[in-house]
Image (cartoon, rainbow, N blue to C red; front, top):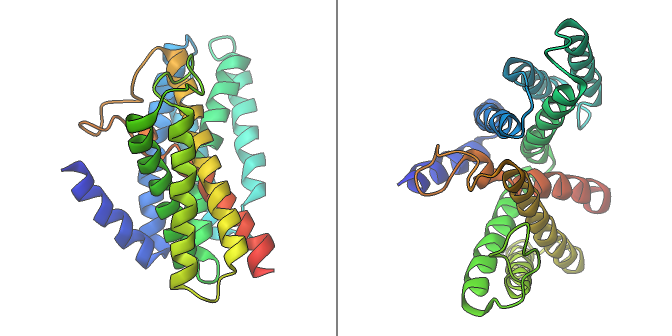
Length: 256
């Protein structure tokens, strides 16, 4: 049921772009930041949720107002906020607390690349491409791994992930890129194949990174927000790697 409700909302926001997409990114970012704060708390840290939320809002505002790609200046603002907090709330708020809060803000903030990707020429195509390849990789990895998985790629980090599943995921992403190259003949087939492979790799690394967070915190899911699916981070962890990858690949090797 949650998927039936969530998928149409994502598709509508992607199709419309602009403020609706930015609003969706804002909601997902705030929920993701909250989950990261809970993970840090389980690690014995004392993160400041309000500071992470403030940093997330600064980053989202910068993406909207800054018309020249990723809003680098906002990183300086967010860093200064964390440094000031470290001084103001010392010793209750330590350097490790600040580092964890800052990392969480910037990590979840990678979601803003969905907006940047949509803002590119033919951005609708590239954003749907990123989502489709990521979904194909995750889905193919799951089914291939379930059916044929024997050799574990990260037994300590994520015991259920297998080499066979990882290869299946890469194949799913590459096949999806082939489909896009067929639907849109103006796209370069070699570049699309390469991009599909890279998206598959990025998707799997993003998934493993979130597994590392959860493994260290001793939890199975980032939260119980979505019944049967875990938390927001469990759904968007791969996006946080694939969206920046597709954005810069398209910007550097296709548009230019």
